[in-house]
Length: 533
Image 1 (cartoon, rainbow, N blue to C red):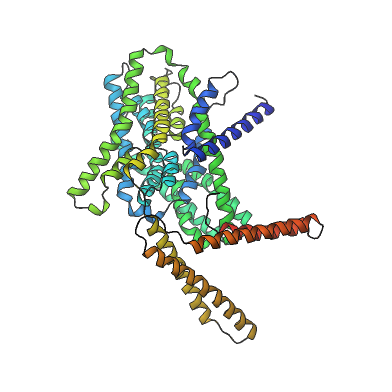
Image 2 (image 1 turned 180 degrees about the horizontal axis):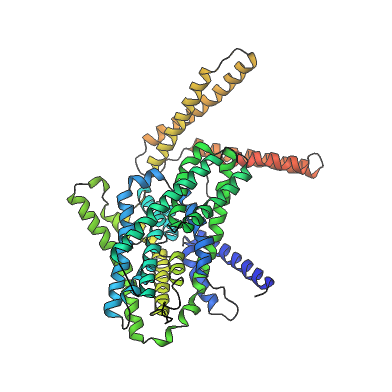
């Protein structure tokens, strides 16, 4: 493929990703569910397709996506829900892989247990991108968001370890349960240690990388360093990336500078947008490669394999959640349990994605004996269908389900928490001003001016808190004065921008000065709450 053709494909993919995102924003449908459908339609047309190289996906795509998700997660919230997260990301993944493996060995003609466990491991880990995008848009409660995030961060390491053990058994013909358990524990402990080490290395380098561009370079390199070190040491590179991201994200408010945080956040949003869009588009384009090897199987074999793969993937999750909830009740851990509506929502939040396809494509073509890997083409097809059914089916229906369940976080409580924190920061600033020396008249004047501004801000926060305390519903109360203030501030910023442009066009202001002053206005506008146009 020539460089020009590759560039045209990349530009076309970018245009499609942007168009689908635009459609998703206006229809409420998740782009992650729409893009695979577009990819399938493109794959059916004549012309070049881009194959999904599993090693490139695992090395260049998965680490930054996981790291970005970890940066956006809460280490404290995941720790508070650790039992549920571990149950879903480790035990449920293991149960799914073993149950699909047993089903293949018992009911699919010619299939082996090891091959079945391999496809089960590929199908087991949810990719929560679609569920999280929908959940945040419809106001899913923060605890459920945390559980979905935590599960998506930790389950990939479990699935890849199980897959490696199953492939080794299928390729070499031997399997040892104690050895498999030992390998899993070693991979998990080693990956955690590597992640902690990389996170503390980042902490040591941050004082040196105070410049925003250096901080961005360090942030972009971190997931790849964690992954490569983990893989070189033969432990879980994926878990190393996640652990490093959780710790670095927890430390960022304390150790990063304001400029670096703003720029790094913008860079990672762009990385997520590009990688997620291209990955979900590529998922659909793998259909021809997946269908190519199915001619050797009978329709009955294909249907049986699909029923086992899709059925176990969809049905075991709600059963697991119900059983674990019953266990919490028996052990009198009601505070860790889930309500029925929460179980229903989490049961439908198990969308699969790129990790499943990348994992199953790593299955080798032949065994150690030189024979074809058992049922490899069938395993690819089953995984592709599971990804498609969950990503499109669950992804498109998750929002209506959440609305039907009336699962919505209390926006008033969230706003009250934020405004109480804002008021507390103003009190802290006023206390700090009282502690300052006021010997110099200039300093005393500046301190008095800043104190007046802070007290005005505190009055606004306290007025907002009074409105929130009197709120009768979960919906945020609307303050006409506050909304009018937002409109007036936006009009003032717009007038300042127009004046800067007028002076630039008249030759009274250089472009360099314009950009600097415009950045000041951009920062001022950025702190204003978003409102529909």
